[in-house]
Image (cartoon, rainbow, N blue to C red; front, side, top):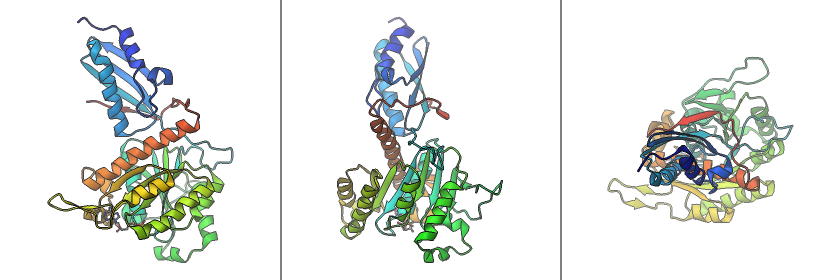
Length: 368
Ligand code: ADP
């Protein structure tokens, strides 16, 4: 077979379907560039999610499309452009593309652990991430990320967030001399502090701002929903029945406030022993039940793993410390699922023709 022409190859690539939207790249306008060099092609395309799954799916679709034309090797270069929520003229943080609340019915289910690991996993995919710890009852972010100190201000007006592992961070814990102080805070104080965290912190441009909200109450969701358009919420639960009752309340709260539930994470889902046998210590099916009730996908099931707690106490979350561990991978899968869901939500809200916008802030070079 002779060498294929640029035209034939481009034509075939235009028909490749975007893995999230299931529409041809040609019609979405997301095939950016095709360069042919003999039997090798270099393809550059735009996607709306940084997820590994999306990258792999697109790579294999590209390979499949060009192989029959005699192409031996297709190199895919992706430009990731995370879609943005609609910000009104009063929005205090219009450069923050997505604001995502992490909620749970009650404490101790691992909400902060999930929020922190998701934030890190999204960062590791190359996106710009902020993490706001708004859990006044137990601001755990300083411990989990091994960071302390007080935020400063360059101009006396805007507070500079702290940074760790490439993430911008803000926590009520950073503002307290004694973190236990926070427990006595009442609603109005929380309301004021949250307003400040959103309005006065110099978050800059972010793809995702993940907010760890206190368990049970809907105060944070309420305050924020009044102030800005939230992308949506993630609900964290454990598998057992008793925990579920409280979670239903969070789901109802989101419904009332018109905050879309993006997905559900079942944490401490099961335990895999050293012989590889799975034990469902707390029963099973909780995450699935909540997902059905919330009419949202189950993003993932994170196993109980002593490393999660140990690394959390050390100040390096497991996604960073041991990304290949089962729990590390489970968190990465949750982040993938979240990124895809966010992209899809925007696409659906825009009536299905919201092709990912250009001017993506970063180019991810993917080499095989
Ligand atoms: P919450 O924010 O819901 O109160 P945390 O995230 O603070 O809960 O987690 C409570 C405790 O459980 C922490 O010590 C944390 O390290 C531990 N933990 C959370 N998830 C897991 C897991 N999957 N495996 C083992 N320990 C976990």
